[in-house]
Length: 170
Image 1 (cartoon, rainbow, N blue to C red):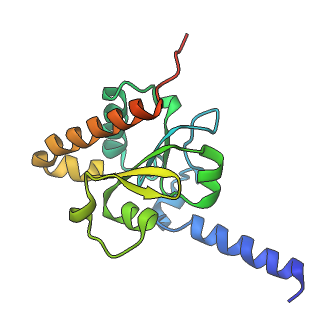
Image 2: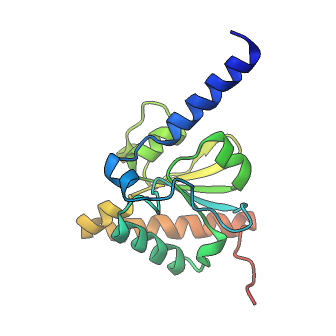
């Protein structure tokens, strides 16, 4: 293949992967395919594992409430479905919260189960990563909410220790 064909193939592969997780229904309903990132496109705190445009309104609303309970304005926190290299390069997070087992496997890889890693600090490159329950799980199982809040408190403590705090808003 000529170099331009190879580049086209790489771009096509990237685009196809970007559609992973979308259903025909969500595409037909016109959900935007962009990831929801802060307006600055940089966020020291990134939540991975929920697509704010994919239609799970209750889980997205719960995540927004969780972020607010942590004391962060929503527009200063990154939220995206997956954490690919392009997203990480654009957002430049220092702390990442992965929501649920699927996001954990995508970000951390390896053979460990979600039960083994949930609530414990992990590393992905130079990013501190905390796996927690997905908001949809919290909506189904109230007994997980207490440990989810404890996990978020650990995230707040790590953010404070790293100097990752919300910017003052006017």
